Amino acid sequence: MKKYIMIMSVLLAFGNTLFAQVKTQIIAHRGYWNTEGSAENTISSLENAHKAELYGSEFDINMTSDGVLVVCHGPAVGNIPDVQKASFSEVMKVKFENGEGVPTLEEYLKAGKKGFKVKMADGSTKHVKVKLVAEVKSAAPEVEEEVIVKLAALVKKMKLQEQISVISFSYNACLLAAKYMPGVSVQYLMGDKTPEELMAAGINGIDYHYSLMLLNPDYVERAHKLGMTVNVWTVSDKAQMDAFVKLGVDYITTDYPALAKEVIEENNKAQFGAKQLRLR
Ligand code: MG
Image (cartoon, protein in one colour):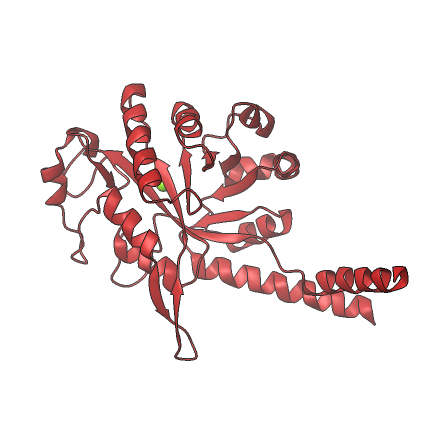
C-alpha cells in the first residue's frame, strides 16, 4: 500500500510539473474597449471581455452629485467636465460614438453577474462570467464612504462577493472596502505601501504600476508569502508583459488583452518545450 501511495505521489508530482501552465491571468483595463465598435467602461466592453474569455474586466466607479453610482473614468465624460459634480440625469444624456451611454453601476454589475453566451471557435456556445474589478475613484473622504457603503450594499444584495474585487488609488477607500465588504478582495493602486503594511491593514492585494513593480520585483514573492494577490497596471508592452508573466504576477491589467494572451501562450509553449527536453 505504502509503495502504491508513493508511486501515485510521484506520478501526480510528475503530471503537475509536466502540465503546469503560466498562472498569470488577464484583466481588461476599462473593459475590452480596444475593439471595433466599443467604448471604455461600457456594457459592450464588458461583453468583449467575456468573448475573449479573459479573467476579468476592470471598470471605474464615480458618484454623481445626486448620489448615483455610475461606471465611467471621469473626471470628464462626454461634454461634462466633472462627473462627480454633474447630476445623474445629465450623465445619462452622454452618448459615446458607438451609441452606448454611461452604465449605472447596478446595470454593469447585473450584466456581469448574468454573464454572456459566447460563441466558441468550434461553433458551440458557452456561458461565460468574468471577474468584476471595480475601481473606486478618489473623492472627498465622506463621499468615498458613501460610495463604498452603496457598493457594499449592491454586492451583498447581488451576492457578488466572490466575483468582484475592489481597487483604488485612495488608501482610505481601500480601508473602507476592507471594513464594509468582508470576504471581498481589495487591492491598493497607489504603490506607496509595502505588501506587509497593506496586509497588516486588512488590504489583501497589491495592484501597482508596472514601473514600480519592475523596481520592486521582490514585492511579488513578499505579497504571495502573505497570501496576497499581485496585479500590475497598465501594461501595453510585449516585453514587459513577458517579464511579469515570468515574475509570476497573478494578473496583468492591459488595454491589449490579445497581446497578453499571445505572451501567455508563448510562455506556456516554452515551459512545455523545456520540460519535454528535460524528460529526454
Ligand atoms: Mg481604472
